[in-house]
Length: 496
Image (tube, rainbow, N blue to C red; front, side, top):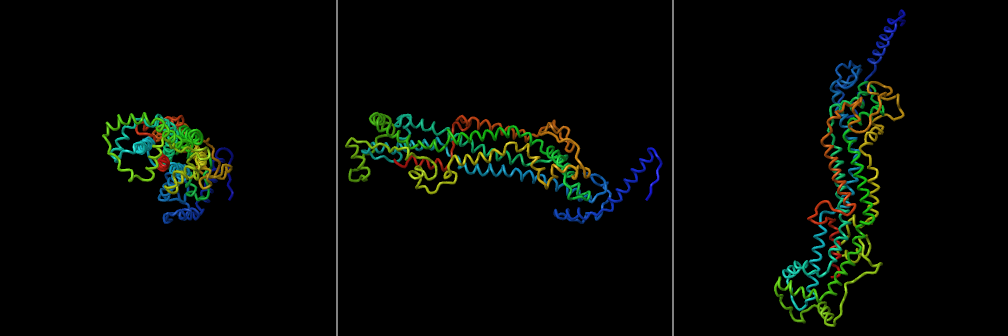
């Protein structure tokens, strides 16, 4: 075909009209087979899918040119794009969720109070020792409970109970704060990953991911910068978590360092048996004074005990103890050499001496503490900057966008070609000129503000625990792990 035109503006205009007509005819003649196939492979019925391109005047989200999408298809693909996006966010946050949950379960064992455990132990020890130093009497359980109530006035072990509690409390405060921090991290991720998409975000997702299908080019991927602008707009509120999130992760790492060093729970428990030995020796060395106090406080407060039965009814062990007392000898509480000193690591003397009768230890106690803490730190470090890097993580997936080096053979939002707008910064305020997602920067997300406050509260708790200070449960004692407290309680009692 030969087109004759005369010079000037009319000639240029005529040429453009002719080229547009030729291009439109070629587009109309293109088959929609690939788009239909892709649509069906995604689990949708192709009954409403055109066999060849039709006029796109009915489209609401994609360019209104010749299209392979009906109105039903466009609506279906719009819902699909939202589902794909939510799935991508969930998949990428699964690493955080799994890490926090698994480490929380590994460190946590419940809520037993250190104060209660130690109080119960010292009360039980008073009852046991009081019976031993007064063999001439027979004490019932009610009487012994009355004796234990006078223990604070009697102070048979001097200041050692308080010293032991102070020594253990810092390690357990840090351990409990770490457990709470892991639970907070898990909850924050759960809440932040549950997105509520705006209509503008939904439209942008459809335009970048499925409008190429509607144009008959289902294999054409969104240009990488286009994908980034869409993700930054849709995840603007999550990016605002970044500063406090990084502070939170840093606080967890810092506290983990403490637990591997001066606040090591194993080291704190290491001297428990020695402290108990010193307490028994203190009571033996001050037996006269304590007996005098006991006669004034206990016998007056609890009543006169019943005389013990005859010597013949005593057990061999009781008889041996009585003979020792009669000979004026003392049997000090067992102490340990450095090689015998108890610890809580698996296979060590603590396990052999005091925990052999309670069966296999839980997994979080049979693993060396420093190893567990090191593993935790290795899992925590990659979490820094997660929310800011999430758009990049999603767009780096070759299923979601073209490679960053592919600048020309990608979908730019309108057609195949280079994407020209600049990529926006991170966070809500930087989306004011986002060309893909209209974001109201004057209305911060309420839920995101709440998550930021939760992170700040958690950071404050972790920082206090870092210096051995407790920020809550001040009246209810220091909470620690069920299995560890149970083992310690058994260990305290093994040689009585």
